[in-house]
Amino acid sequence: MARFFHAMEKCFAVFPRYGKMFSIVWKTAAGLIAAFLILVFALVCLHAPAGRDATLAGETMGTAYSIRIAHAALNESELNDLHKEIRQWLANINWEFSAYLPDSKLSRFNRAGAGEPVDISPDFQRVVRRALEIAAATGGAFDPTVGALVNLWGFGPDGRRREPPSPDSLAAAREKTGWRHLALTADGFLVKDIPALQLDLGAIAKGFGVDKIAELLRDRGVANFLVEIGGETRAKGYNVHGQPWRVGVLRPDYAPAAPVLQGVARLAGGRAIATSGDYRNFFRGENGAVETHIIDPRTAAPARHATASVSVLANDCLTADALATALFVLGPDEGLPLLATRFPGSEALFLLRAADGRFTEAPSPGWAAKTRYRPAGAD
Ligand code: AMP
Ligand code: MG
Image 1 (tube, protein in one colour):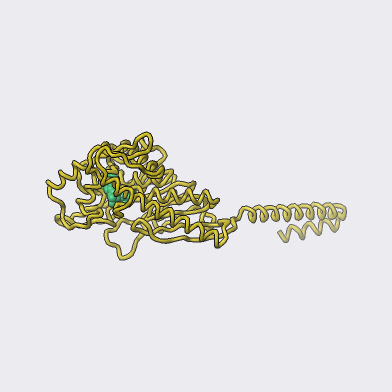
Image 2 (cartoon, rainbow, N blue to C red):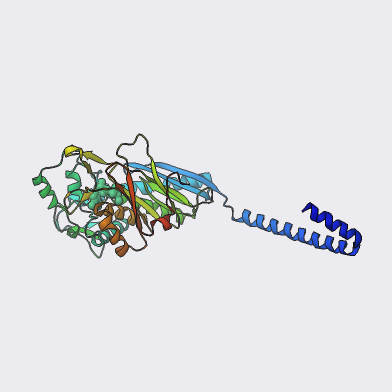
């Protein structure tokens, strides 16, 4: 470059008229480049998100929640008010859906008689309506009336157990289940046609809580957030670095000294990811076999197969949560075809436990592209 200018200088010394022309062209070009750079800088500044970054955290539904907010146009006191409102919503949800609170709406319905309509809130109606749709679409693999079996196996409010229940008690509990015994009337009442039917919304309530908080944040004009309750997540916009939110998929080890990531997914566009697995809530039954808290309604026993966990991507967290439970019951051979035909747009990643204790991944065809999933450590 220096040589080029040196040559040009020499040339202009011989032809001064061309030297003046070169100087004009050069100055104009330099001016245009400077103007362009200023414009680019201004555009970057305009688009660079400004505002408050925050994390709101606490406990709900027997687990932890965290809400990460990026670049929100909220001051400290507005943020505190928002958190107060969220805590109130979560308390309401618990008050409606908890099987552990004897006076919750759900517990009162469980004590109601056959044919006795129980008045439920619009939110409760929304959850039950979707639960029944997903029960029908999954052939009953997801069943919100599985409560008696969940209890019998020691995963409900009646407390833990160490060994499998007797065949007689299993047969009796089975008689008390079945989503077809549950109905939502046109005017929003909930009814059952067998008195002992026990509603259990444990596989869907966290997802609903996440959706509810996401709706609240959107109503308050928060454009960038990641909401998480006990591992069920929903994200919108971008994180504090202006990147899509990242959600870790845990390696489903039974008793890790510390949680280890299997991979990382990107979550945006208001979508949700929920995970169900056998590695958190289980006991060891005969011959040390793992008995997990997810019941296969077809066998009335904990789902037992190579699936260690399944993560589901869906447009809302209520659906992702219910589908994760259903797909855990079904396993990849039945679950992946069902997902493709009945839930187009949703994706899943199964982690399967191999004989040597390692995990293999069985994703649906669109999982990697839609979540930009990468194995842990690959970034
Ligand atoms: P999740 O961790 O979301 O898969 O939910 C598991 C919880 O849902 C269990 O602790 C039970 O309360 C309940 N549950 C167990 N099996 C089923 C099932 N097949 N369908 C619906 N809910 C279930
Ligand atoms: Mg679930």
